Length: 136
Image (cartoon, rainbow, N blue to C red; front, side, top):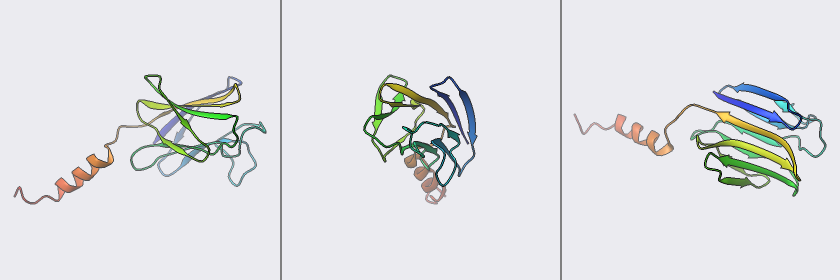
């Protein structure tokens, strides 16, 4: 389960719970699927941002098009990972805040909350140890 909290440029606040296997989307209405949160702004792509859960943890996908758009994944320490068009970034407990601007105008800020989970390596080690019969 993911919890997505967001604030739009007009001050609108919201919170959505995203069950496993589902995704949260932000964009302009009019595509194949309506976005979870829509905005009537022609500068915003139909699937500008997509948040979904994956095996190692949630990811944010930047579908927003255009050179003047900036999508940032911000860490608690202030560092920033810039997402290029068509790329995704992994959300972590240290980096779970996403900001989107078009030009200098703020469009949306969101923060994703999710439960702790072991890394891929930790999960593989657990599986391996569950089938380790050498200790018997």
